[in-house]
Image (cartoon, rainbow, N blue to C red; front, side, top):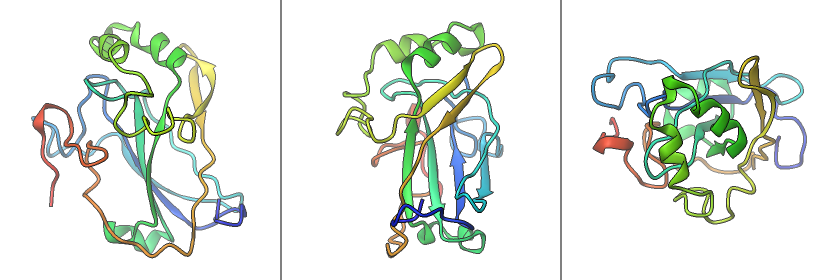
Length: 180
């Protein structure tokens, strides 16, 4: 949504998240040349984007989340300094617990049990209240996560870190580095 709560048609949204083991393509050891679980969509007339992906894992010290950046248009997305909004979407605990019971997500349940939205270094300022997705569906048939994101279209892009796994100045898990 644009700052006036009008749909932000044409905005480009870049989203990315970790895999079931908490690894980020392009950044985590052993998958630096991979580009999975990343994508770009352009907002339709209703200001909506749709991504299809797998449920992200949970790594040590972070609540389960999906990163995203908003750009004024698709032509702007080639330079991270053009982003007009950067944030993360937290996923509800009940959905996380259902998914993390699967063997594929070994370790995620333990990591999630050691953190809360209040303790997370990104969501802790408000317990994720503004960034917690609404989820429908179930583990077996799939989930749909939704989040309304107001964007101030008058914001001057100030740039930021490359879109890796880290948040709030944190490196991705396992000491991975941000790419230039």
